[in-house]
Length: 145
Ligand SMILES: Cc1cc2nc3c(=O)[nH]c(=O)nc-3n(C[C@H](O)[C@H](O)[C@H](O)COP(=O)(O)O)c2cc1C
Image (cartoon, rainbow, N blue to C red; front, side, top):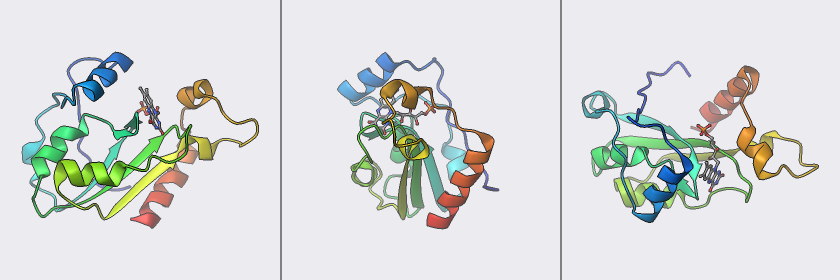
């Protein structure tokens, strides 16, 4: 994308159980301190997976940090899409960051695969994006921003 990027890192390896606990207890996972870096930008494109219909929980710290600032944000995700798009991502950003995002792009792995036979969870879960597909997706994202 030829944009600067800031990587969110967690100390411990994330497992499905960690995700479940984050959901049940509405936890905000600890990540590396990126507060200083965020100050340098007026517009952030957030990139995250979707877990149980929610934005990847490590982003919660970012939402807290930028809450009620006048930063502009967009979100892009590439998620499995077994049940179609995840309809609540914009609402979650507004709730957590107090900012209405400029654009929310929920790309689905299920749209990248043949429709017949319908891809099952295992196929969606094992999907690895190729470099060529990644380039196409990046173009798609840039066009929507
Ligand atoms: C515990 C768990 C829950 C998930 N829930 C959803 C979901 O609600 N909607 C969706 O589209 N994808 C869902 N996914 C698929 C992830 O969004 C997908 O695996 C992600 O894009 C992969 O990113 P990663 O390779 O960086 O983990 C889920 C995956 C996991 C592991």
